[in-house]
Length: 343
Image (cartoon, rainbow, N blue to C red; front, side, top):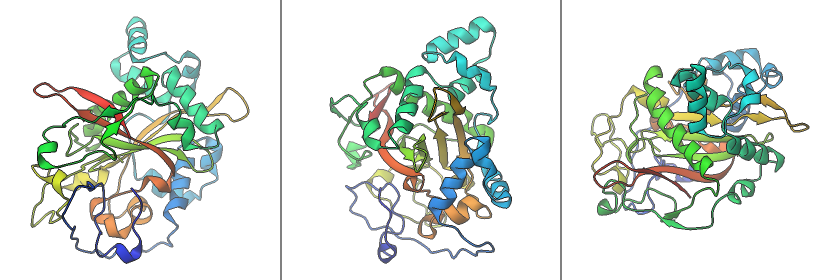
């Protein structure tokens, strides 16, 4: 979703993931941020964050004070210091990885870590294509199957006139391993979130989509998830006249998702491994981390615009060019049945 101009802030000040079908205006109380540090642009801070999560050489070029502030706002769902020797043993898929792990006596926890650090072959290849293309979103879009898949009713959304996705149809990657890996990331965030204080549900009010981007300059492949709508969690909190007095349209109707301190943790960042541009080597492993947007931190101060600070929205286009939206939707009627829809 595009960023709002300052002139429109007063009208659409809570413009995070509101369905185009909504007929409601959004209302917002404004909170003035006090700044005790000189502010950088959000794009500049996002670039420094990606550097911090890149190679040691990239990280070393960041101002020491800024690096410390950024590190204080990172809650890793997968440890950030893997054994890089694993790069020579990239499994072809989650099932094969689990089988390899079982035979070697590894726990599910360790296997899942390795699948983030060094994903299956198809994911690694897509990550290299992303960099080799110079960060061209079309390189990712060309990997999609052209077949249009109508988005079915999701947990009664159609009855509420709620449109959860950018378009009424979605697509999937031609290589099924890529779709399976995206599903794995959603499931892993839900499973490990509580370890850092983030309790999420994989439903249409909470965590169901992310924005796949190609990083500015490096072309590194990433997804910004947010519950409450990037990997975003907390997509549609329940209206509460005292705690969350914001009308977010049709998709909010029926929500019992409480607005609380977990909103600080709604932005989740996945980065694919970073390939060497001049060889077949890999220079940085994959990353899965929650960006803590608590009001005292640099993430809140420099990555979250003031007009959406109450809901802690970080914009994916500060990190790079967005290629597609990735949706993980429960399309089951009586039994949960999740499917990937890429829009």
